[in-house]
Image (cartoon, rainbow, N blue to C red; front, top):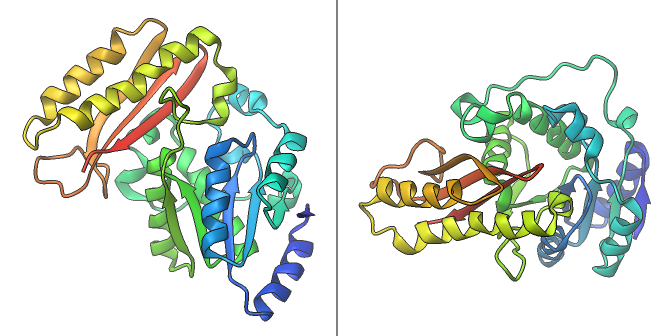
Length: 278
């Protein structure tokens, strides 16, 4: 695996790859890699000739300074994991390589920016689009791979690609779960054994919705699933909603695509999860 820390060195190498007719896949991450990330690398390898994984803990998408400070950064372990799946390239830049002083960025994402995650983390998606745009500009990938676990993030990036007419195809990859159902996340390392047990209610509540939705009982199944989470010790529910899978507006029985999304504080750790219902 080749490791690059500067934009210029990476771009020179990728230019050669492109001149040799190779397609490029990008998997943007913030590190603390787990099997969910590695599944994205494997999907990229099936579709592209060259797979680039970026590891960059992006400061502009954190709405909480402590969250940024405490975000795990086990770079040596991450390199080992990437090598174990034969990733071609790691791009691991410093903040000064990615940002100049006093950079401004704003993109009009419409309502999508203010729903669900956007309500609880104002400004978050401006930071996400800012860094992903930079990565697309540096790598110029043919395809970029994102996990379904960050469902809203995928829709936001898709909207940016459409607004700016960017020449990249996005691929959403399924959620990888632990054997007990917990969605894999870099934040899971912060969970105590009790937290982990309590957190299982999130995937159980989503599965309850999937199993019990009959096409016309949206509010009943949402209410019952929400009660499941609210009654779980050690878990503070932020939201649990069934949304239109394309707009994230509240779903109606007529919505062609439905997704159930939830976020909760489990102990000291904030977790998100979702499940496609239809």
